[in-house]
Every structure is written in structure tokens, then in C-alpha cells.
Length: 230
Image 1 (cartoon, rainbow, N blue to C red):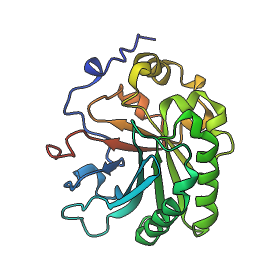
Image 2: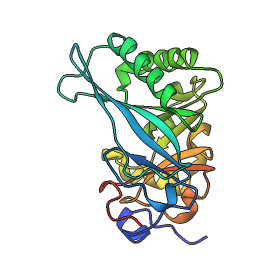
Image 3: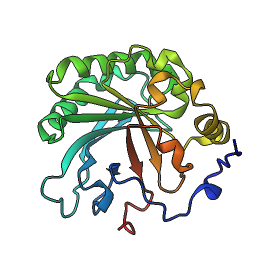
């Protein structure tokens, strides 16, 4: 087997287009790219946690949403880097309310939680996911994003009360190079939830096509908000 170059700059051209059945994440007021007109994942609420403060603001407002496009509302929970809360429990009611609002806005049968919990918040995170699943309608499917390194720690993902785990294989920080090599060359080292079901990729940090091709469902992020996408 030929060696795979996993450095982002060497894999695919900058204009690489996601597959036609992919789902675009829309974090800002963005035009929907052509590949994602069947379904889009749109931030419905931003929840910001800083110390003992919990702030909520509206999410994206997609431009020219095509008729028939299914919307997966996303609740994005951001933890302040300088003033992280001691616990996620203080934001439980706010996040549950945001997820309930997202559920009512869903036209896809899905909602998604995007929360990059810290190691000290792992138990709070798992409890929160269980609480959200219990509060959502039974016929609504529940998706969660996951930091890539969680895919090597069963304590994060074993028995997680979600219908879908979406590992984000981009913005992987200081572990970027070794994690990219694992994703590209040794996917068997990843947690089963991170191997073939769903995954998130970035247009600016693409892998070889065969990597995304392993997954039944892919989400795509674009640093430029899809401004130059067809």
C-alpha cells in the first residue's frame, strides 16, 4: 500500500469539495453550499459559560434556504478559556432549554449538541447528555460532536446516551499530527463510535478522499463560512 501523506497542505487542493451527500455546518450567516442543499446543520443557539455566568445568544441565519432543505439545529456551548466554570451542572437548565428549542426547530428529525468539555467536566458532560436524551422526544435523534482525542478514551464514549457521535477531525491542537496519522492509517485504534458512522472534517484541513469515504455521514466545516463555495 502506498504511503499516505496526512499533512493538510499535501492531501487535497484548497478548493476540495465535500461529497454530494455531506452536511455543512453553518456557524455564521452563510450561504448554503450546493453540496449541502439536502440537509444543513445550523447553530440554533450559542451558550457561553464563563465562571458562574451563563449567556445565550441566537445562532446563524442561513441565506436563501432552499425549499425542502432539512435543518439539523445545533446548540453550541462555548467554555471560556480564562474563566471556565467549575462544573457544567450550573448550566444544565439553560442547555436543556436550548436543546428543547432546537428540537422544535428541527425539520430533519435530528438535533445536535456541540460542547467541548474539559477532562475535569467529563462526568458532568456524560450526565448532561443522558439528561438531554431523556428530555427529547423519543422520535427525535440526538447527535453530539466529540473532540478527536476522545476517540482514544473509552471513558468519554462508552455507553454515551446519544444516537450519533461526530468526532471532529480538525483543529486538533498539539496532537494534530499523531491524531491525523491514526485517523488516516490506523482507524482501528479509534473508539468504535469514531470509525465508520459519522465524522466531521474541515475544508481547510482535508484528508485523502478515502478517509471521509469510510463514514456513512460526514459534516463539513469551513473557516470562511462557505463564502467561496459553489
